[in-house]
Image 1 (cartoon, helix red, strand yellow):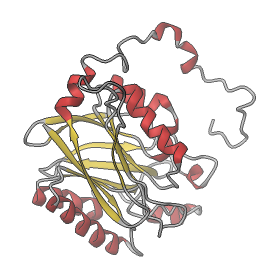
Image 2 (spheres, one colour):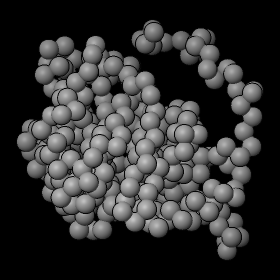
Image 3 (cartoon, one colour):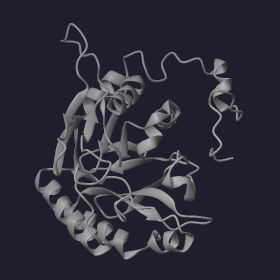
Length: 291
């Protein structure tokens, strides 16, 4: 079985209405290309615009039953294609940076709020998420276990590790920042060390502080017929507006996970207690760290 993913590397437009129109057109192109799942870049409902004034921030946020989200739920059902759409979620005490995954029947199967908010920047006014869900996504031809990270989440190995431990086979990563060699290396590493696929969708270079480079890493480093390691990158977009469609070989990935040495095969959790300690010491002390 293959999972065909389309990364919708498109700008959001100038209004929520234009975002819906552009997003719908991109989803239709993805389905025409054979996609089972379409993934948007980060916070597509606002174009990753985060008002700093409380009233404006609340006005920009939308609830889970908002027409913007229902539009993509209906579209997922019409196209018989899963859609992972991103939005500024209305929440208390402050909005969240979220992604909602609809299955091919338009049903919500997962909603994830960004856990590692960028508190050194505009995201300081948002509420961080407090869970890392994994969901079974029915594709009609089979199912896959899916989890999510959002942008800065990828910089913490614990995020992908916990998703792997919960059974994730594929991690979807909406993004809104420059994807340079080191950030791409993080994505490659998260896939390699957890033996799972990581699919990241970024905005194109016409969007400020973004440069495209949406990518899919399958995490399969070794294959029996190869003498050495292989490149785990199945596809990477340019800087331009683009819909990148990539097929993930799920059967091969599952066989690989059953035999290789990474993931949870030889971990020693009894030694990892420091990972859950709350204290932060020099040189990592930051005055803007969320308490």
